[in-house]
Structure formats: C-alpha cells, structure tokens
Amino acid sequence: MTDRNDAYFDNISGNNRDIPPGSGSDNQVNNGQMYSNQMNNNRMYDNRPGYGYPVPPRPVQPVRGERGSGKGLFFGGLITGIAGALMIFAICYLGLYIQKLMEAPRQPDEQFQFKEGSAIDESVLTKLQNLESTVNKYFYLGEVTNEEFQDGIYKGMIAALGDPYSEYYSAEELAVLMDQTEGIYYGIGAYIQLDTATGLPKISGTIEGAPSEEVDLRANDLIYEVDGTATYGMTLTEVVSLIKGPEDTNVVLTIIREGASDYLEVSVTRRQVETPTVEYTMLEDDMAYIQVTEFDEVSIDQFADALATAKGSGMKGLILDLRGNPGGSLNAVVEMARMILPKGMIVYTEDKNGKRSEYACDGSRKLKVPLVVLIDMNSASASEIMAGAIKDYELGTLVGTTTFGKGIVQQIIPFRDGSAVKVTISAYYTPKGNNIHGIGVEPDVVCEFDGEAYYSSEDHPDNQLEKAKEVLREMME
Image 1 (spheres, one colour):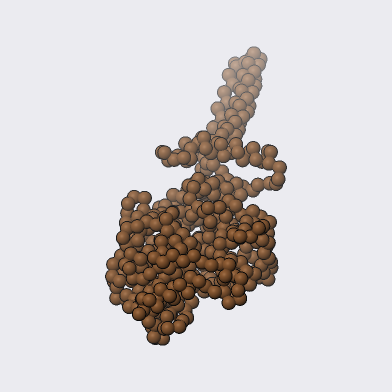
Image 2 (image 1 turned 90 degrees about the vertical axis):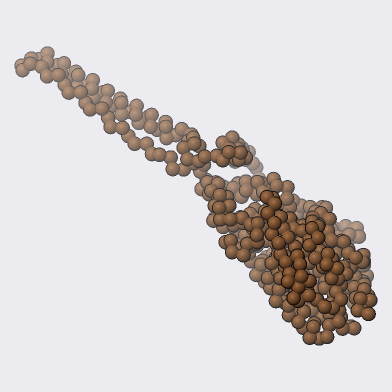
C-alpha cells in the first residue's frame, strides 16, 4: 500500500544532497537530535561530576607522660581512644553525607541549559515524569515501554502544529516509508490521501490489474477501518502500515462509499505491486493520451519516452490525464514541465522568512500541438503545479473539476538515531503568483465524473475522457 499523500515534495534523503531550496541544514538536524538523545537515553541529565571521599583527619598524637608515671599512661590511652572514636564517627558521618548527596535530585543547570524562549523547560520535564508515573501506576490496559512513551512525546509535539502534512517518524516508520519509494511492495495497489473534510484516509485511485481494482475499490472511497481498527485520527503512514503485509494474506477494509446505505466490508488479498507512473496510448484522430499517476523521479524518463513515442506516431493533439494524481517530487514535476512549457517561470516557493526559490523553463521544448489536461478533486500538489502553469500560460485547456488545493511544500528532515520529521517548509505559487492552497485550480471546462455509469458497466465509459476528446478535436480543427 502506498501513501500517496506522503509523497508531496518530500526529500527522503538521509543527507542534504538534492534537498530543495529552503530546506533544513545539518545544524537543524543536530539541534533536533540533542534533545532527542537526552530522552532516548532515558535520563534527564548526564555527566554529573563524581564525588571523592575526603582524606580523614590525622589522628591526634597521645600525650606522653613522664617515664614511670601511671597517670601519664592513663591519660594517653584515654586521649587515643577518644581520637579513634571521633575518627570513626567522622568517617560514618561523611559516608552518610555523600550517600545523601548522591541520592538527591540532580539539578538541570549542572549539565543541560534550557534555550531561552523554548517551550521545553524544567517544569515541562517534571510534568512529563509525573505523567509517566501516573500512567505506570493507574493505566489498566497494558504496560507502556519507555520507547513508546518517547515516540508519543515526539509525535505529540508535531501534532501540536495542527498541520495534517507534518509528521514524526520513528526509525521503524521511516524505514517503511523508504521502502515505499522503491516502487515495489506487498499491498493492495491503491493510492491513498487524507480527506480533510472527514479526517479519514481516502482512496484517490487504483492501479490497473492490482488487487484493489479486482475487488472494485473506487476513487473517493473512505477507509473507516482496517481489520477492525478505526482509522480516524491516524496518520497516513500508520494507515498504510496496517494495510501492507505479507504476500497472499488478506486485509479487510471497512469502506464508506457515497450512495451506499451502509458500510462496505471489502476483503483484499495482498500481492506484490509494481507502481506504474506514466501510461501512454494513441487514440482516434491522431490524439495521444498520456496518464501520469504520480510525479516520481522515474516518471521523468517515462514521460519523455511517452512524448517521443507520441510525436513519432504522428500526434496532432495531446490529452494529459492528471486525475487522481496526488503529487510527488518537486524536481520531477519541474523537469516534466520543462518538456512542454514555454519560456518563463514554472513555479516558485517562499518560506517563513520570505526566501524565494524559482524554477524556470527555457522554452526549447515547448509543446507544439493542442493540449487538453484532465483534472479532478484528487489532483493535488505537483499535479496542481503542472495544471496551474499550463493554465497561466494558456498552453492548454483544463477539463474536469476543481483540484484538491494543496499549495504547500513538505520536507523530511532525518536525525542521527534513524528517526525523522516531515514538516511543512514553504508555500508554492503559480507563474502568475497564485497560491492555490485550500482553493485548487479551476477547470476551463467543467465536467463532473459519471461514476454510476463507469462502475455499472463492464466497458467503464469515461465521460470526462470523452469530453476531453471533444474539446481537443475542436482545438485541432
């Protein structure tokens, strides 16, 4: 199972090579790691100076009496005994004093200095320990490990941002995410993104021939439960980890489908899935059709090959299908846009400090045939960069429905312990300076998808594609 929404402009690298402009630096990674390491070691402050035992006082020399004097010997012995007792008492006292010091709470200023203005101070650390003690004492449903407590602290801090696209990954979760980027996995072959209206994960599309298509899972199906586990409030990474699993095992999805009178229980058999990114075919009247399902690095060469093949086949018009495409790599969409756009700006980003990064095209490969772009409510992020630039330059006509409206950029910043945080770092703007976050890109020709006709017939008639053909024919005349 692939977390499509997670792919939006993420830099998955464990170093700073190929990081998009406006990204974090090594200093950011190290600073983030300092506190993380403190908590992972399960001690609040380290390197306390040791306590050495002081040298005991030298024994008092006995007073020597006169030779042959019994009185002198008596007082000498008395004084020696008293001195010995005092020495024993002093050693015992010092031992108890040192033990008391060693058992006393260690003060934070001995090793860790809190940053001025930080939300993390001594009172916060004290409260965290109090919360931990309370859970350990009263929580009934099971034991909680230190690692689980620590991950919960980190996840809670990122959740406080109120941003559905920012997320903390444990080392194990990051490894799963990295595996997904390889394009081959055991799952059901569906694209998933977050439905912001309900807070539930939503299927935005299925892969042809994959298990999800075989059991008739559909775009816009909401995933309410996975094997009986409610998905509300989960991150997409957590949902994907539930859906993925060993080959030839089953996973049961509880689906909410528009128009259905009740929940749908759908059992899907996991299989190895290879994710295609670009599909090409020639249609009637010398119209080429290229579908891009996501913008990955492998998509760049695939898109170039599809364009070259279409041109070699006598293409007189092009339909570019971005429906259900939830985004992907910023670099990928920029490189692909350079294959069709005129000279000028493709997109630019601005971070919280106003730093602007621009991505431009030299126009040397501008598309020379009429173009129609298919979009829908599941076209997001990188798809909207492509569609928005085409619309701003009036290079083609957009057909379908308004896009998702994701105009912000995320980056994954790794830490030395193998964990990472994905955080929103900037907003992007179309060539004319439009930020479409929460708004989307509107089509030039509105055409709602007829799902009832598509799913009720074995031929799967696609009314939006037919409308695109109609518009393209008029442009080709």
